[in-house]
Amino acid sequence: MVAHRVSMAPSILSADFTRLGDAVALCEAAGAEWIHVDVMDGHFVPNLTIGPPVVKAVKHIAGLPLDVHLMIANPDETVRWYLDAGADLVTVHAEACRDLPAVLREIRTAGAKAGVSIKPGTPVDTVSSVIGELDVVLVMSVEPGFGGQAFMSESLSRIALIRDMAAAAGSDLVIEVDGGIDESTAPLVVASGARMLVAGNAVFGRADPVAALRAIRAAGERVLSHAT
Ligand code: DX5
Ligand code: ZN
Image (cartoon, rainbow, N blue to C red; front, side, top):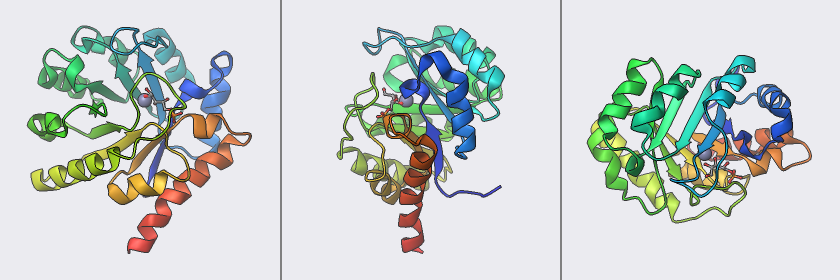
């Protein structure tokens, strides 16, 4: 298996929900590292998507690990459901938690990887107090809630700040970027320090999703080969 320097986490939010099995098979055929699952509760974000039963069903058929992005209020109460459903990485939004360190501890104690996400308006400093407890920081490059939105270029400096903050703390956390990632924005976020890319519309919205995923990864990795 090829070890890629940029990991891909296709978001099945943009897939056909009547054919999730096909979407998972497609992610696997394309060589993705993760399957990104967007959980929205109609409170923390206006949209309402899927919950633990669907996460469990996807886990049942997926050979790839599940990257579960919880856009829900008060995950303190329900994060356990997603861990039980088989999430391999659970990312929560910092401001949605009553006790962020406790939620991260619960995730890690269950044997999953723990991530914190910051929305475009969330101060980057929010992650500094828990940086030692994180496997992933998920930088949102759109307002969370919907697929297919335009990439916000202000997120590039935020990615770079997280990269510097992690280096200063001696953390090897991975920076994941979510929202508006395609062949043209992938090089920008990778150059700023991202190594895990979520892409929904730019994969599942294309005629050839496998080729699209590979092209996004290649565009990101091209930046790294220029740099070395
Ligand atoms: C947005 C979700 C994203 C979304 C990305 O709130 O967190 O994961 O599916 O979709 P695209 O790649 O279409 O912006
Ligand atoms: Zn997401």
